[in-house]
Length: 227
Image (tube, rainbow, N blue to C red; front, side, top):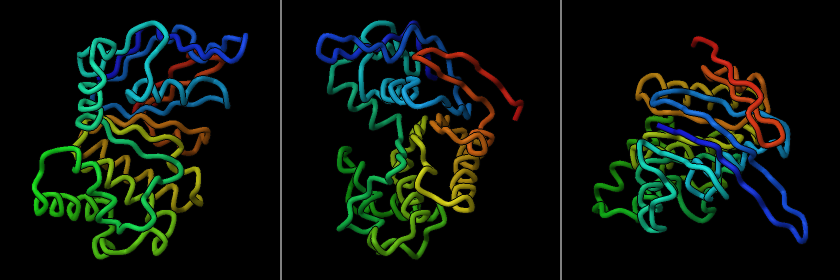
Protein backbone atom coordinates (compact mmCIF):
# COMPACT_ATOMS: atom_id res chain seq x y z
CA UNK A 1 0.00 0.00 0.00
CA UNK A 2 2.78 2.45 1.02
CA UNK A 3 6.31 2.12 -0.33
CA UNK A 4 9.13 4.62 0.17
CA UNK A 5 12.38 4.18 -1.73
CA UNK A 6 15.44 6.21 -0.77
CA UNK A 7 13.33 9.18 0.34
CA UNK A 8 15.31 12.36 0.91
CA UNK A 9 13.78 15.66 2.02
CA UNK A 10 15.87 18.78 2.36
CA UNK A 11 14.94 22.29 3.49
CA UNK A 12 17.10 25.28 2.65
CA UNK A 13 17.24 27.85 5.47
CA UNK A 14 19.44 30.76 4.51
CA UNK A 15 22.84 29.31 3.68
CA UNK A 16 22.09 26.05 5.49
CA UNK A 17 20.56 22.89 4.04
CA UNK A 18 18.68 20.77 6.56
CA UNK A 19 18.17 17.13 5.62
CA UNK A 20 14.96 16.05 7.36
CA UNK A 21 14.86 12.62 5.67
CA UNK A 22 18.05 10.85 4.71
CA UNK A 23 17.41 7.88 2.43
CA UNK A 24 14.31 6.29 4.00
CA UNK A 25 13.27 2.85 2.72
CA UNK A 26 10.11 1.27 4.10
CA UNK A 27 7.00 -0.61 2.95
CA UNK A 28 3.71 -0.70 4.84
CA UNK A 29 1.28 -3.30 3.57
CA UNK A 30 -2.46 -3.12 3.14
CA UNK A 31 -4.24 -3.62 6.45
CA UNK A 32 -1.20 -2.98 8.65
CA UNK A 33 -1.26 -0.87 11.83
CA UNK A 34 2.09 0.90 12.16
CA UNK A 35 3.29 3.43 14.73
CA UNK A 36 5.95 5.96 13.70
CA UNK A 37 8.10 6.97 16.67
CA UNK A 38 11.11 9.16 17.36
CA UNK A 39 12.21 12.36 19.12
CA UNK A 40 11.42 15.85 17.86
CA UNK A 41 13.35 16.55 14.68
CA UNK A 42 13.75 12.86 13.84
CA UNK A 43 11.87 13.16 10.54
CA UNK A 44 8.68 11.35 11.47
CA UNK A 45 6.34 14.29 10.71
CA UNK A 46 8.15 15.02 7.43
CA UNK A 47 7.69 11.36 6.50
CA UNK A 48 3.97 11.55 7.32
CA UNK A 49 3.56 14.68 5.19
CA UNK A 50 5.12 12.91 2.22
CA UNK A 51 3.12 9.69 2.51
CA UNK A 52 0.02 11.84 3.02
CA UNK A 53 0.74 13.55 -0.32
CA UNK A 54 0.95 16.90 1.46
CA UNK A 55 4.60 17.37 0.46
CA UNK A 56 7.00 15.97 -2.13
CA UNK A 57 10.44 14.50 -1.45
CA UNK A 58 13.60 16.20 -2.69
CA UNK A 59 14.62 12.86 -4.19
CA UNK A 60 13.62 9.24 -4.02
CA UNK A 61 10.28 7.67 -4.81
CA UNK A 62 6.97 7.28 -3.01
CA UNK A 63 4.51 4.70 -4.33
CA UNK A 64 0.92 4.72 -3.04
CA UNK A 65 -1.20 1.68 -3.91
CA UNK A 66 1.03 0.93 -6.89
CA UNK A 67 1.13 4.50 -8.24
CA UNK A 68 4.38 6.51 -8.21
CA UNK A 69 3.20 9.75 -6.64
CA UNK A 70 5.88 11.92 -8.26
CA UNK A 71 4.36 11.22 -11.69
CA UNK A 72 1.00 12.76 -10.80
CA UNK A 73 -0.17 16.29 -11.53
CA UNK A 74 -1.23 18.49 -8.62
CA UNK A 75 -4.95 18.01 -9.39
CA UNK A 76 -4.64 14.24 -9.81
CA UNK A 77 -2.68 14.05 -6.59
CA UNK A 78 -5.33 16.06 -4.71
CA UNK A 79 -8.05 13.73 -6.00
CA UNK A 80 -6.08 10.65 -4.96
CA UNK A 81 -5.45 12.13 -1.52
CA UNK A 82 -9.15 12.90 -0.99
CA UNK A 83 -10.22 9.46 -2.23
CA UNK A 84 -7.67 7.20 -0.56
CA UNK A 85 -6.41 8.95 2.57
CA UNK A 86 -8.05 10.08 5.79
CA UNK A 87 -6.27 12.43 8.20
CA UNK A 88 -6.54 12.81 11.98
CA UNK A 89 -4.51 15.48 13.78
CA UNK A 90 -3.60 16.29 17.37
CA UNK A 91 -5.48 19.60 17.27
CA UNK A 92 -8.72 18.08 15.85
CA UNK A 93 -8.88 20.80 13.11
CA UNK A 94 -12.65 21.18 13.35
CA UNK A 95 -14.44 24.28 12.11
CA UNK A 96 -15.69 25.99 15.30
CA UNK A 97 -18.98 27.49 14.04
CA UNK A 98 -20.26 24.31 12.42
CA UNK A 99 -21.91 21.22 13.82
CA UNK A 100 -20.33 17.79 14.15
CA UNK A 101 -22.39 16.68 11.15
CA UNK A 102 -21.22 19.59 9.00
CA UNK A 103 -17.59 19.01 9.95
CA UNK A 104 -17.84 15.38 8.90
CA UNK A 105 -19.54 16.29 5.61
CA UNK A 106 -16.79 18.71 4.61
CA UNK A 107 -14.63 16.31 2.51
CA UNK A 108 -17.71 15.31 0.51
CA UNK A 109 -18.02 18.80 -0.92
CA UNK A 110 -14.97 17.96 -3.05
CA UNK A 111 -16.81 15.00 -4.57
CA UNK A 112 -20.02 14.85 -6.56
CA UNK A 113 -22.40 13.43 -3.96
CA UNK A 114 -25.98 14.58 -3.45
CA UNK A 115 -26.85 16.52 -0.29
CA UNK A 116 -29.13 13.81 1.12
CA UNK A 117 -26.53 11.15 0.45
CA UNK A 118 -23.84 13.28 2.10
CA UNK A 119 -25.91 13.70 5.25
CA UNK A 120 -26.69 9.99 5.45
CA UNK A 121 -22.99 9.11 5.14
CA UNK A 122 -22.06 11.66 7.81
CA UNK A 123 -24.70 10.30 10.22
CA UNK A 124 -23.36 6.77 9.66
CA UNK A 125 -19.75 7.86 10.21
CA UNK A 126 -20.61 9.61 13.48
CA UNK A 127 -22.56 6.58 14.65
CA UNK A 128 -19.56 4.35 13.90
CA UNK A 129 -17.41 6.35 16.35
CA UNK A 130 -20.05 6.43 19.10
CA UNK A 131 -21.49 9.91 18.52
CA UNK A 132 -25.05 9.11 17.53
CA UNK A 133 -27.23 11.85 19.02
CA UNK A 134 -24.44 14.45 18.95
CA UNK A 135 -24.70 15.30 15.27
CA UNK A 136 -26.09 18.81 15.77
CA UNK A 137 -23.70 19.81 18.56
CA UNK A 138 -21.11 22.49 17.83
CA UNK A 139 -17.42 21.88 18.50
CA UNK A 140 -17.42 23.97 21.70
CA UNK A 141 -20.23 21.78 23.05
CA UNK A 142 -18.10 18.64 22.78
CA UNK A 143 -15.31 17.30 24.99
CA UNK A 144 -11.82 16.81 23.58
CA UNK A 145 -12.43 13.10 23.13
CA UNK A 146 -15.72 13.76 21.34
CA UNK A 147 -14.04 16.29 19.06
CA UNK A 148 -11.41 13.72 18.13
CA UNK A 149 -14.18 11.23 17.37
CA UNK A 150 -15.69 13.80 15.01
CA UNK A 151 -12.27 14.15 13.37
CA UNK A 152 -12.05 10.36 12.94
CA UNK A 153 -15.56 10.27 11.46
CA UNK A 154 -14.52 13.02 9.02
CA UNK A 155 -11.46 10.93 8.07
CA UNK A 156 -13.74 7.95 7.37
CA UNK A 157 -16.32 9.75 5.25
CA UNK A 158 -14.76 8.91 1.87
CA UNK A 159 -14.07 5.28 2.81
CA UNK A 160 -10.28 5.68 2.73
CA UNK A 161 -7.83 2.81 2.36
CA UNK A 162 -5.38 4.52 4.73
CA UNK A 163 -5.78 6.69 7.83
CA UNK A 164 -2.82 8.84 8.82
CA UNK A 165 -2.96 10.01 12.43
CA UNK A 166 -0.44 12.57 13.73
CA UNK A 167 -0.29 12.50 17.57
CA UNK A 168 -4.09 11.93 17.74
CA UNK A 169 -4.06 11.50 21.53
CA UNK A 170 -1.67 14.37 22.29
CA UNK A 171 -4.40 16.64 23.67
CA UNK A 172 -6.33 13.92 25.52
CA UNK A 173 -6.17 12.39 28.99
CA UNK A 174 -5.10 8.78 29.45
CA UNK A 175 -8.56 7.24 29.63
CA UNK A 176 -9.83 9.10 26.57
CA UNK A 177 -6.62 8.23 24.70
CA UNK A 178 -7.32 4.54 25.22
CA UNK A 179 -10.88 4.99 23.93
CA UNK A 180 -9.60 6.72 20.78
CA UNK A 181 -6.98 4.03 20.19
CA UNK A 182 -9.63 1.35 20.56
CA UNK A 183 -11.53 3.03 17.72
CA UNK A 184 -8.43 2.91 15.51
CA UNK A 185 -7.89 -0.74 16.40
CA UNK A 186 -11.49 -1.57 15.52
CA UNK A 187 -11.20 0.20 12.17
CA UNK A 188 -8.03 -1.73 11.42
CA UNK A 189 -9.32 -5.15 12.48
CA UNK A 190 -12.93 -4.96 11.29
CA UNK A 191 -12.62 -2.78 8.19
CA UNK A 192 -9.06 -3.60 7.18
CA UNK A 193 -8.06 0.06 7.02
CA UNK A 194 -4.31 0.65 7.01
CA UNK A 195 -3.41 2.84 10.00
CA UNK A 196 -0.17 4.84 10.21
CA UNK A 197 0.16 6.67 13.51
CA UNK A 198 2.78 9.17 14.69
CA UNK A 199 3.26 9.15 18.46
CA UNK A 200 5.99 9.72 21.03
CA UNK A 201 4.10 7.73 23.68
CA UNK A 202 5.11 4.04 24.05
CA UNK A 203 1.73 3.15 25.59
CA UNK A 204 -0.05 4.47 22.49
CA UNK A 205 2.43 2.80 20.13
CA UNK A 206 1.68 -0.52 21.84
CA UNK A 207 -1.73 -0.57 20.15
CA UNK A 208 0.05 -0.97 16.80
CA UNK A 209 1.34 -4.26 15.42
CA UNK A 210 4.47 -2.56 14.11
CA UNK A 211 6.72 0.17 15.50
CA UNK A 212 9.05 2.10 13.21
CA UNK A 213 11.60 4.32 14.96
CA UNK A 214 13.14 7.40 13.31
CA UNK A 215 16.28 9.26 14.34
CA UNK A 216 18.14 11.99 12.42
CA UNK A 217 16.04 11.40 9.32
CA UNK A 218 16.66 7.66 9.18
CA UNK A 219 14.85 4.53 10.29
CA UNK A 220 16.89 2.98 13.12
CA UNK A 221 14.53 0.11 13.98
CA UNK A 222 11.43 -1.60 12.63
CA UNK A 223 9.75 -3.98 15.07
CA UNK A 224 6.70 -6.18 14.65
CA UNK A 225 4.82 -7.25 17.76
CA UNK A 226 2.88 -10.13 16.26
CA UNK A 227 -0.53 -8.58 17.01
